[in-house]
Length: 62
Image (tube, rainbow, N blue to C red; front, side, top):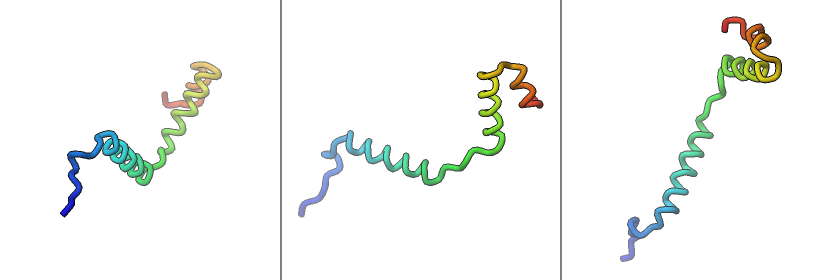
């Protein structure tokens, strides 16, 4: 009988397969960011483009 000996497998192949499986799992079960996350990102964009004053006026509870 011939059986596959897992110890003879190339560790790189196992690593790639594990990485692909974990990446697929992460993509399949990822949730969308909540509304606050979009507000924070928009505030950061305003800060970069227009400065602190504009960012604070957009994000009033800062």
